[in-house]
Amino acid sequence: MTVKVPTIDAAGVAMPAIGLGTWDLRGAECVSVVGEAIGLGYRHIDTAAMYANEREVGEGIRASDVHRGDLFVTTKVWPDNLAPKDLLRSAGESLERLGLAYVDLFLIHWPSRTVPLAQSIDALCEVKRRGWARAIGVANFTVAMVEEAAARAVEPLACNQIEYHPYLSQTRVLEACRRHDMAVTAYCPIARGAVSDDPVIQEIAAGHGRTPSQVALRWLIQQPGVAAIPKTARRERLIENLGAVEFSLTEAEMARIAGLARPDGRLIEEDHAPVWDAAE
Image 1 (tube, rainbow, N blue to C red):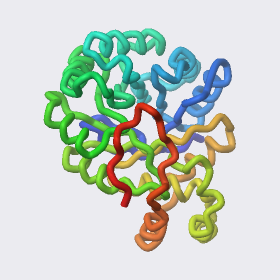
Image 2 (spheres, one colour):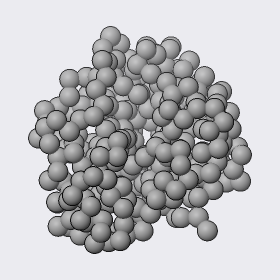
Image 3 (tube, rainbow, N blue to C red):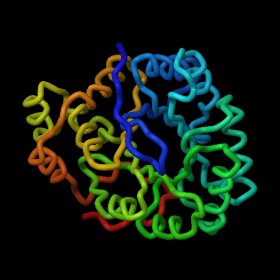
Image 4 (cartoon, rainbow, N blue to C red):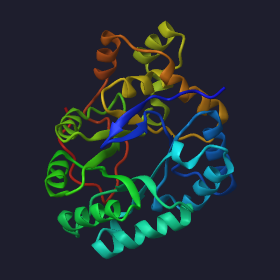
């Protein structure tokens, strides 16, 4: 029996609150993990052109017996390809590699330092108008970038995919996204495993008969409009992560976990990253 995952609204498209991140999955392992995840109940699969595994993700999808319309597939365009013609070309190439007529969500993976955001947003909207994506959005956008993108877009922006876990407050970005009816997808949601050694999360987990990873994921998806995409290649972790949908945290527990945020909590630092909003 597969687990039923609840959904959140992403510009009118139902996005499963727990998905499978596929960063660093390659070759036959990627095909196998995607197929196995779908068999267990995952319906949200996240990939990107930069991950160099879109072809394998597509193979894993086709190896499953789940109808394409029941799946939510996300891919992303790398910042090197954010000039309008390049973005459209990259979107088409992603669909070709995936072997799909459309994706459910197409994102700008990181903002560009050289291509004006207005140009990229115009091209992103064109991807949706062409029917290549049911919804469009951004990733790793700051508050100011969310505001600028939302003001420019003539199609609704569905999502901002960001690093988000108990050690990194994203309150300002969350508030900006909610002002524009955008969902948030949390990557690195268990802080690269750090939550497993956290005494506060361990205590809360013990009280629910759950694991620290499940508690961290539950903390995320219990927030309005937030989804999480943990990455794993192990069947037992796939099953464990789905368990986050099977219980709830109290308001006091939610607040205790939120209190773990710290100024140096960010784990993903890339040379091409924007100047992040000030930590709280």
